[in-house]
Amino acid sequence: MTKVAFIGYGFMGRVHAACWQRICGVRVAAVCVRNPASLARSVKVYGCVGEALPANLPSDVAVYTDAEKMLDEVKPDVVDVVLPTSLHAAAVERALAHGAHVLCEKPMARDAREADRILRAAARAKGRFMVAQCLRFAPEYVYLKKLVASNRYGAVAAATFTRLTPPPCAPDGKSWFQDESVSGGLALDLNIHDADIVNWNFGLPTAVSCRAHRVSSGALDHLVASYDYPDKIVVSEASWSATESFGFTYGFRVHFARATVVYDPRLAAPFMVYPARGKPFAPAFRARDPYQNEIAFFHRLATGRVRAEENPAPLAEIRASLALVDAERASARTGRRIAIQTAKGKAT
Image 1: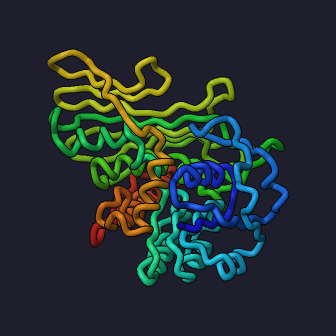
Image 2: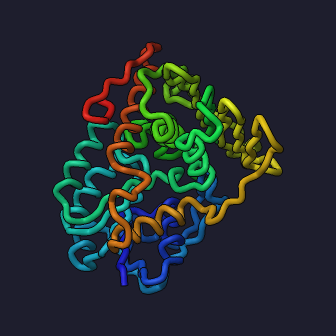
Image 3: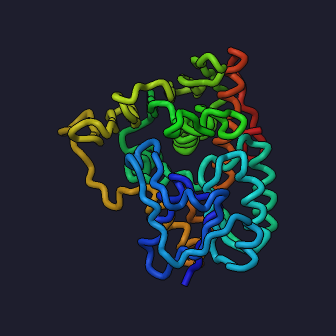
């Protein structure tokens, strides 16, 4: 039996908990939260995980307000860190020091320098560490990755990735997401998804240019990032400026030499391949839930049923994607094109 404990338990904690509870041989044993009363309430969620989630915790789960005490007493096999981003580094270090395998919700940290702190702790630890970069486990994005890697339709000429949503806010109109010192703001919390997909498919660009709109507080609420590659045009767009009635949308459009591939969940046929020869077709996907896929993979990793080399989200790449977002933020702040310096396979 794999004992899982949570540090943090907001909406993503509940998403993860539901996934863990679907896996045979897993028991959610404990949660650590600042306010235990919050466990009895449903919470508003953002993005593509639904409108609201119930508490969904088994009645025998131990509840703590002190993470150190929970780790000492429960001795979990796996710790799932689902805290605000600014708290990730300390929580991951603590859990790894206790010998647990640790899954950390994206983004890994507030910037690449803080990520390096986590990676040093992971290198010393006996437990496995993985960042829950969920799109690398989403079948539509996995399919695109295979098309790019296989060269089935030739080289990519252009690619556009989008992720547009109303601003995240709690019922009182406030949210830690909008405090950039805590979440990293729009670029880090939302655009990290598509920046990582850009890096995963095409490697790091030589430079990035980012134009952004800011609200009166100075926080970003819309950005367009352009990534410099010698042979293709690659752009991502992220927004917290959509209206509530617009809702949340995301996807991509990729033009290959011999096909155009479109993913738009709002369409009747969300994923379509339009080849230069032959009829357009919609690939059949199985196991569509990226959250379930990533949690199930991490369970196999923690229990030794897959090797670290099989991880589709290797830490060096996730760290490089974080550095790419750092460059986007610098470009948005300065209005300048930011060169991406690399050393030993990672952005610096």
